[in-house]
Amino acid sequence: MNKVSVKVFDASGQLIGPIELPKVQKTDADWKTQLTPTQFQIARGKGTERPFCGNLLDNKKQGVYVCVCCGLPLFSSFTKFNSGTGWPSFYQPIAEENIAYAEDHSYGMYRVEILCTRCDGHLGHVFPDGPEPTGQRFCVNSESLRFVDQNELYTLAERV
Image (cartoon, rainbow, N blue to C red; front, top):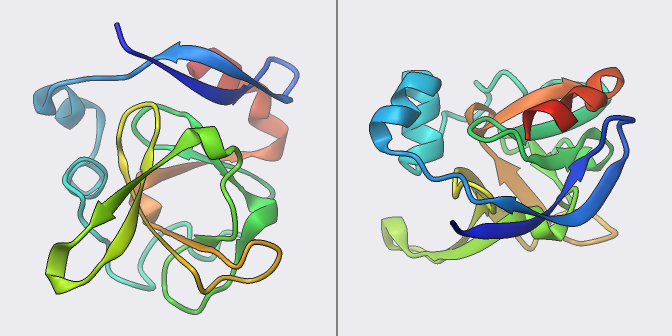
């Protein structure tokens, strides 16, 4: 079985690692039983939700955004910012190990796609026009994420 090296939360709500976890691999039929049709189309089919429509765009709560497919922690609310683009945007991932990158030449343009390292779920794209300190904008589909409140981080240890 393939393994990936990632950072996760422990039972006390602290980010630990990197640790080795099994890569999550499922059939489309399995993903369709777990995800809503829209989540499947975006996270597994590399789709994009319409701008300014995502349910996490205006979320101001403190916590962590995890992969909707496998629960891997991806982004912290502390790095979220209003980019004005219509999608949740972050200036860095929670851990570089938890994000994978791929070249995307779709629609006649060059972009850098971001994926969940553990399950290859499509998250969105990263652009070099974000704020300091990184100058990056991780532009993510709400449908690819699930929000976990800061007071519930300990529950992530049970799910990953």
